[in-house]
Amino acid sequence: MNLYSSDTIDTDLDPRDLVLDLMMQAREPELIRKSKDREAQITKQSMQDSKILKDLLNGVGIKQPITVFEVEEKLYVVDGFHRTKACLEYLKKKPDEPMTIKAVLVKKRTYVEAFLAAQEMNQEHGVGVTAEEITQSKFRSLIVSNKFGLSISKLMELVGCDKGQAAHYRRALIACANALEGVIQDKNISVQQLAEVLKTRLEEEYYLTDSAWDSKGFPRMRKLANAYSGIVSEPPAETEEWIEYRTNQAIKNFTNMMKYYDAGIFREALRKAVRGQELGITISKRATWESANAYSDEANYEENHGNTTKFSLETDQF
Image (cartoon, rainbow, N blue to C red; front, side, top):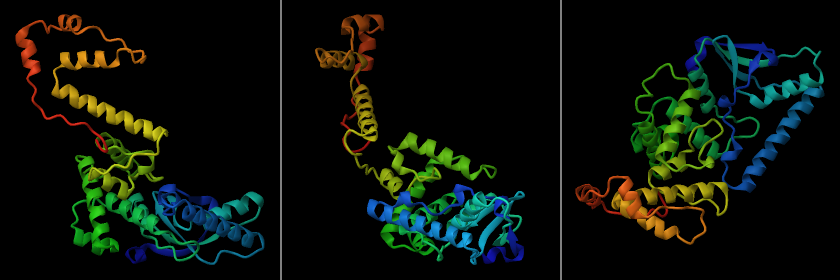
């Protein structure tokens, strides 16, 4: 916050004038892998929220100031989501009561500056963020700051992690840089637009399930790093993600076979493979199809039959 000291004032603000933008919320218990730890974090936060509201109803004000960034005349809460939400809950119960909340107001900032400050906030008060949440916050900051070409040693210094973790960051950032080629130079793109473009392009390149994305629409660092390395964990059997995963595997396998064999041979093999399987698929005989598609010409057939590309079935990755 020292960077903004010349534009910072201590003030009191009406909670109803504040913007609670989820993009600014660093807390994200959904990122916690172990369900027991995740539920415990949610429970702790819920108890903290209830305590803040109870204190307000008992006439005990909030002592710790929130942090607010002024962006194009809007007041974004950068730190203090739950304290602000408690104030708004209080006002629902007592709408006629006058209320203000102590705030550190940083004036005349951009949305990106507010977003980056929100990711960096180390909330020592209340319920602290977990290691998973911190990792993802730092990863989002690196993406939005266009810091894609950092070395492992620089990432270790900047992020404050060991060499192995820095290597994961680096692989994920390379994947993002490749996906955002031609976009990262656009100074007018918003954070939301950046996340949307990144998601679309990464999904075109890698197999990423719904759980590979955080609540802001950014890729989860470790899952993207694994996908970039070709490491794909098969989802639990018989789930929607598992069906999608296996379907995409089959599509890639079929695509590989079509590249290896000529169209006529592939089609004939497929016709014989599905015959009698009660799949509801009907494929005409090879001779009929070849005649209709000009494969009766021997030269044309040879041209399409001479593919010697190495063929391999996709199993754990694609």
